[in-house]
Image (cartoon, rainbow, N blue to C red; front, side, top):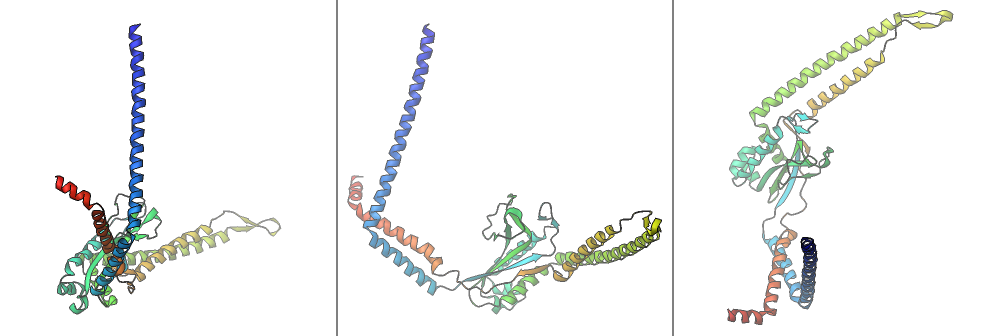
Length: 339
């Protein structure tokens, strides 16, 4: 009997302790939210009381940003989108099984190390050193396709894309090249120089010649197949007409039914394949093809907004710290003297 009493007492004690724990947690959360609310109100009142110096700090930040914009060298960027004609697409996995797109991007990114030396950069692009001296950066980037719908959505400029993401993927057959420069630039000649630099790779040249030769062989074979299928269709049609015999009352009786119409479908499929091969050969004869050319930049990268995002918060934060120090200087002096 005493054992049952003790066990019931322990259970009741456990229940009381658990309830007390929840009460304490509730009181702690209540104090925390009250403290946060009080701190928020104090901050709002403090900012309202000192709105003038804080507003002046923002104005000073805007002025300094404009000054930096007018005194610094202008910087512009523009992009060109290329199609990699050497890419061999795996339609199920939506990737380039040849790996040539990755190779070309890595090759172009080597130009970044040449931008500090106009002579080396001019040799790589086969351009005049005076033309490339204003180029500050050249980089190649993957184009991201969200939801795998085949439509380009954004460019991975910061390299933050997760390669293990199966929903948002890199477009395997296209890539973006961004050029940053400081003054007027002949973008057409720079584009042609980048293409020459890409096509200077001897291995890619061999791959492209092999691609064109295989394309030519396939076209020859398709033309033969189309002619043979067309001839076969005429023969079958002739044989069908021979098998037609007159019946009673002048009616025609089919001795053997032939499905001549199926040949039209086969011929159409061969023509579709032929058109795709001809398109590949005529429109994309080189290693790469420009899908979207450079556009003339209309906005300066390092403008007032660019500097303002950095300068204005710094000015505002420094002014806020100074005001807090002035408002609590007596307490801070007492603490300093005490310790």
